Length: 199
Image (cartoon, rainbow, N blue to C red):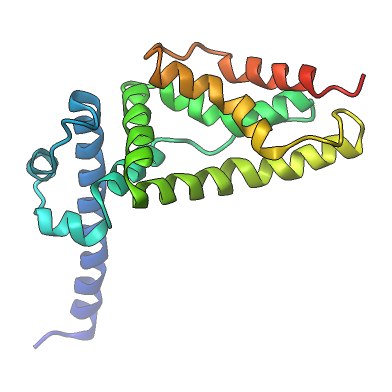
């Protein structure tokens, strides 16, 4: 017979084991993404590396692309405090992507996540939801504040601004397959402020 204390211990082990298994799968996914890319991605390889079953993988993620995007998003740190300077505040919203691209195989993992988001419906939904929540919405609030203070023009187009800030990063990762140098996102923020300056 199981005591109440033993039962509570057992219930705690379940979620902990599941979280550990999920973390192992995401780490194995990142290794596979970096080594083989999107086109040659192998779920069998991920399952073997993570000592997990394919059934578990398919139970937790609606698609392999969504798993790849989750694996990439787990690498992206929170935005740092941007201070008071407009360029620093805009940079703070996008610099986590730069930090990810500059860490280990982060550039390869982000590249695969972008390809997965383009090819796979569920992956695209996960990626766009993250962009909307972590970049687009806070950027809208910040730009409205800067426009109210006449730092930038009021006629900004949010989609255009997101493309202006992130497009060069995607180009560098996807087309040039080049490393992202330190300060890259700060440069993009500076470019935006020059284009939309009120003077």
